[in-house]
Length: 209
View 1 (cartoon, rainbow, N blue to C red):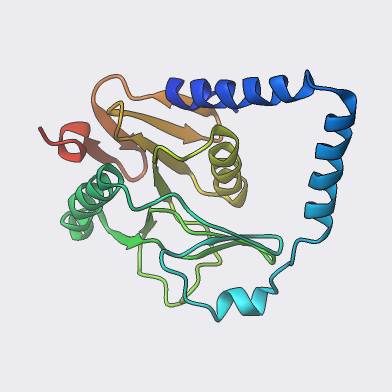
View 2 (view 1 turned 90 degrees about the vertical axis):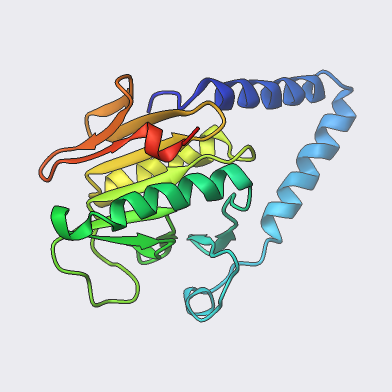
């Protein structure tokens, strides 16, 4: 999958540089560090699916094969972009024939659950409390703490599940990206779009001046 954004690439590069420095230390220290990592992985407590489904997390978390993974939310820019985007779509839901959901649990596989910042369903509103069918559109809004590898995995889960469009929005750079099964494109004309149905959201509505 293509690199998400320059800021994430730079952050990942910095982190990799830190690991490189660690490799340059004495071999005994490296062995000790690796042993600690293996022990930590081996003793990690896995959470049953039933416990995840019966627990209220605030904010809600992803669930990945037994591990509960916190989502990066809470920053002002993240919340503002989420509010503006969801309000724009919600106010046009009848015209577009869509339903809009905030932080909706989606069951990707029997042991993987994702919670997108926003998702859009075409047609009648689903009756199920946890979606087991792919939404038409999932939207993720970047936070400063987001790592490239984690976001790539999340987008891959959506597309592999059958989500037709994934929008990635970066409030810090005011840039946005559209992911489909064909790849990734950066929004250059200032409008986030889908086809069939055609949904168009000007970035000026997401990042008001």
